[in-house]
Image (tube, rainbow, N blue to C red):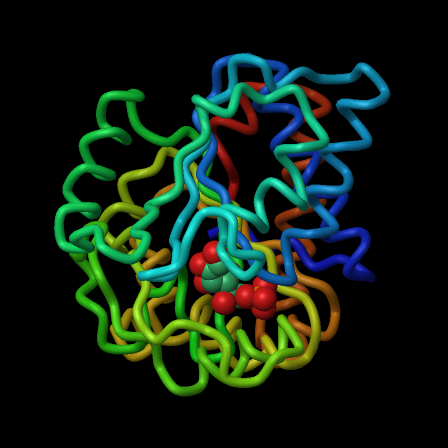
Amino acid sequence: MEVVVLDSADAVAEYGAQRIIGLVKQNSAAVLGLATGRTPVALYKCLIRAYQQGDISFQDVITFNLDEYVGIGDDEPLSFSAFMRRELFNAIDINVENTHIPKCPEGENPFQVGEEYERSIELAGGIDLQLLGIGTNGHIGFNEPTSSLASRTRVKTLAGSTIHDNSLNTNKAGVSAELAVTMGIGTILDTRRVLLLATGDGKARAISAAVEGPVSSMCPASALQLHPKVTVVVDQAAASQLQLVDYYQHVHQQQAAVQTRFGQRAVDQPLY
Ligand code: F6R
């Protein structure tokens, strides 16, 4: 696992955005896995800026979001569909038909959504890069503690702490749904590269358990230790409970030096 510790939340967003911009420049039809929540908002702003400056185009990019609440309509402001339009899609040149969210509005059978979503990911050739945030309880997507590490896209019951955190995000207590359709941990582990961002001291415990703790369904993000290409980008606050920060910084410097000497191949054959 590559761990990049940066000075500020802005630096985390910029670093994450550059990884995505680099990928899209390399492959204009890249398949991106996207996340909602507070953390990726600043990164999305960087992507919008890069698009406005003519640096990249999203015309051929395909996206799959991690999750969506069950029973919520596309146009409801609290839906993740509305979030994505507001925070990213409406401001870039992405083709709406290339964007996917595991929607399950009222009246649809949530148990079919998961299988269909898995099929669409497969049809798109799999996800090149999955962007993740992390819950204070260590969840990725809405895979709450004790989720199967082999799980696929399915309906999940949200943990009480997640419902609480989500209501803080929206400033409206009690408005979030209690069920969601989420990519599974197995789905996330099948992606070709993972980029997990975390900022703020509220995430310090979860980051420490994910990166340095045992692989356990009690911290779903710890399953990422089984993935060969994961980059965790954190600010100082989120890194504050990590024991090996000096080592991660040393690796990061080595990686940069090797990349300067050997170019892109060094990124594909990382030193972490
Ligand atoms: C969002 C998602 C969640 C969030 C996590 C962190 O699509 O799947 O796992 O990434 O809850 O949320 P924030 O960024 O709001 O702290």
